[in-house]
Length: 158
Image (cartoon, rainbow, N blue to C red; front, side, top):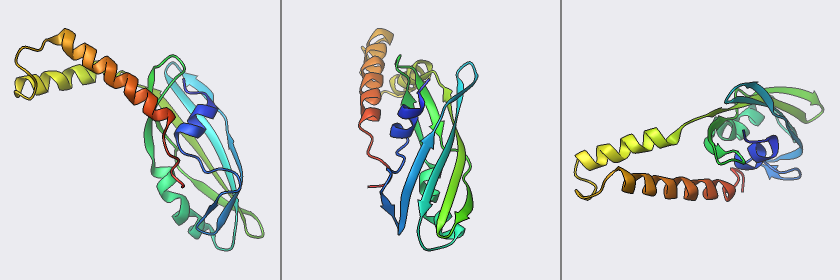
């Protein structure tokens, strides 16, 4: 499973002190909870401060909360992840608490990608002399590069 820190980094959470459309991020808290084999939830809290309403906060961070990404565990297992539904409440003058319950579910990419390679092969988009061993090698290399790229993901907020 991706631990909370990896979920926070990989999902592009804003940084403390970062200003997003006039709202300053005061704190970010992410935890992880094991729900059942291959499924984990990530209760999150983000506190922002700024002039405006809860609706303005919602508009500002809507794109962030709609983001879906594939993250990899420390063992290299892929997980499909999302932030969950955003809830916003005012917690003082010009301060807002955004909470959500993100989730990651383990996925098995190899069969999907093998199926895709077969599709390409039968539609003559792959060399006719390639075989499943070649496909597996290509897929393993692709997944390794994909995993490396998730470590370099630019945060949603620049």
